[in-house]
Structures are given as C-alpha cells and as structure tokens.
Length: 230
Image 1 (cartoon, rainbow, N blue to C red):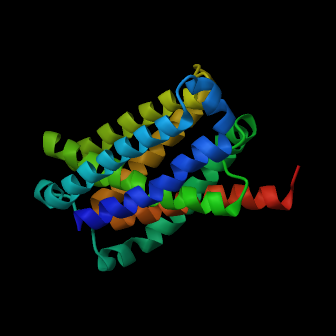
Image 2: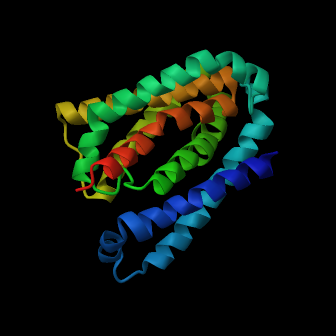
C-alpha cells in the first residue's frame, strides 16, 4: 500500500513541477537560476519530491495506527464525514479565495492557473502529494514524537504555515507584516488545522477529499478567466 500511495503522490506532483518551471514561471526561473539550467533544478526537485513522498508514505502506512491515527481510513468513515467535509471545504475554498486568493492571483499571474486543465492538476496534486507528505507522513511522525494527535496537528499546521510564508519569495514577493499578510497566514493556518483534523478523524482519504474541495478555488478562478478574458 505504501508503494501505491507514494507512486500516486509522485505522479500527481510531476505535472506541477513542469507547470512551475515551464508554463507559469519559466522565464523567471531561467533568469534566477543562471548559470544553472531549469532542467537541472527540475531533476533535483523531482528527486527530492520522490524521496519525500516515499518516506512519508512508509511512515503513514506502518506507523499511523500505532500512534492512534486512522492511517489511510476507510469508505465507511469517509461517508459518515461527507456532511462535514464537503460544506466545510466549500466554505474554506470560498473564504480563502475571496479573502486574499484573487488579489494574489492579480499580483502573481500564474499562481492561479488560467486554464481548467492546469487548475485540475493543482487540485489532484494537493489531494495526493500534499496530503501524503504533510498529514499522512508528517503529522504521523510528529504524533509519534508527542503522542498526542491534537498537539501533532498544531505542530504540523504551524510548520506548513511557516513554509507557506517562506515560499512567497519564489514568486517574487517579499513577506512583510501587514493586515493582508496576517490574513494570509491566518487562513493558511486554519486550512492546515482543518486538514489535520480531517486526517485525525477520517484518515488520508478524508484529508485528501477535503483538500480537493478546498482547491476548487483554482477551478473557479480558471472558469472566471475563461468567462472574462483580458
């Protein structure tokens, strides 16, 4: 099972790396990496992502239930959680997009894809790769260290919120203390906490479904871009 989860996560991440380096930010990447080539960075990133998803898939598969987490989860538990996961995901999707996502999309063209195909790719990548690494593996490992799922959830949410803040430099933005920045970080923390809670209650299947629903904002943005081309 670990091999299947890792394989799906890695396959979902590959188009994302291509999108960043070839479609959305290709020119900026070539200028930033010179004299290194984009191909070198792409290969290095794929190796690191492959290692990350393999290690975390193994951790989730073999350690989650030992630490009191549901691991992969099951369809029965997932069905029971649907009345919470789907509306909750829609609410988080709408609030994060309307709150700051649409403004970020204007400042950083490409962060939100303008095509439905790439938007769907981001959704799949978030559900399969991000949830395997962040919750199935990362939160499981943290739970093994602290032995309390709720503490592990707080820790993973804090860690990935910091990662989000540090990643803005990749898109040519500088993080400063402002109302907008605080709202962005606060929203990121809430989303990661919700995903961690979904994992703790329903397993990887529930967290992946919630992530998929939250990332419907990418599809909504792409539909708006198609409807109102500039």
